[in-house]
Length: 117
Image (cartoon, rainbow, N blue to C red; front, side, top):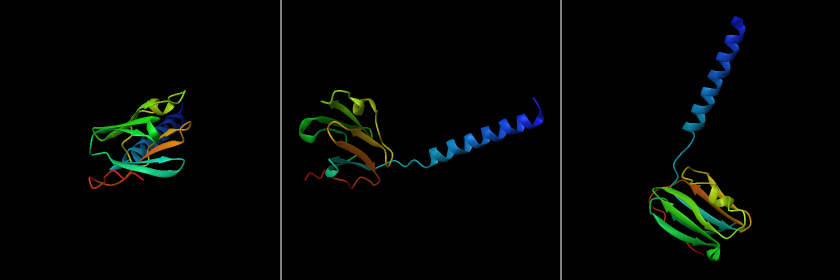
């Protein structure tokens, strides 16, 4: 290898490290999740309060535990929403396409309360 090859490899590694650092610093912990069915807001739940919530007439069940939200039950055939794992950072989303449901983390604090309507 020549000196230029080492310089190129070093530059690529430095750029990769900078991108990784920028993506880590850009994450902000959310304060609540917003549940939407067919694009219409159905409820807002605080991430500060643990609980289990049936969604969309019981087609899905959302669990909030230790500041993270995850789908623990769904009646859809593929269960992709359950396999997406827990979300806690602003703008992260769980989507259940067959049930037309999304759960999105929004910023905020402990002042969120459940809103159904």
